Length: 309
Image 1 (cartoon, rainbow, N blue to C red):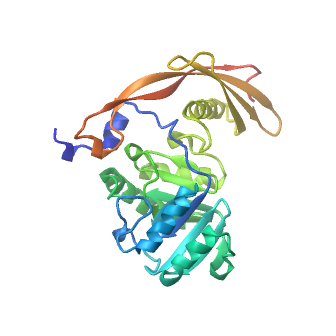
Image 2: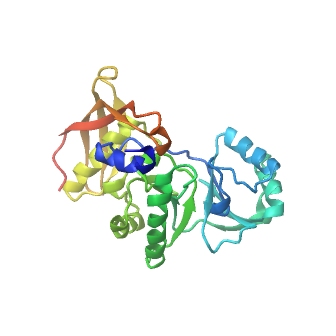
Image 3: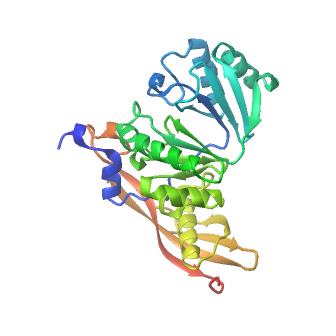
């Protein structure tokens, strides 16, 4: 079968490539609305972006703030809606003032002139970056359309945008929810009502959850296993995850996960084992061929306390 007829997300799902362990995402984000037809292959450049603006966004990214371009149909092309996270501030910046805004941000000068409002509810980005990977076009855009339609009908305030690359093309359709930075993969239309309900209740939607944004891959593996274990007992819990490495990889690790509800608390010991999966990370890799990658799987869960009731 030719590479042109293959899709990395289909192949990833077929070989059992786990979602858990792929939830990492930067804490500091700058989101800039820009018409998607102008997006380049990189996640923060557009074909009609001036060289000075490109240099400014590269400088900001180099100082540790992730930058994505976002788009939706009703946003004027030369009036940029900008989200600054985790600050939760939203700005409206005309195209001819964008360089001034970025310079002010870099120099820690007040941005009050462009301030519009603060983030209310949940901001959802769905990767539709087809110039980066064809799976994000094929699966991402269809999911975005359905997500936007259903979010508009939901009681919770959701703000839904298309986005450039969010990481993990092979997990398309990919979604991230701010301010919690919860990442999801392999989202399809059938998942959307339950995902929106879960996020409205400030809970991760477990069937597609990739793991905590600040955790290591093995910690994410344990976290998702713990959440599913607790969910089987009907328990919604806050978790604290730490890693205790018994032996060096590629051997198993034991991860301690503490959980707490209003009336109960406990601790789980989760054994996570690495295994090697031969896969492609994106559709661009098909020509070169699949390569080995180490992923984690939770193989045993032990509770140090009584099971939640």
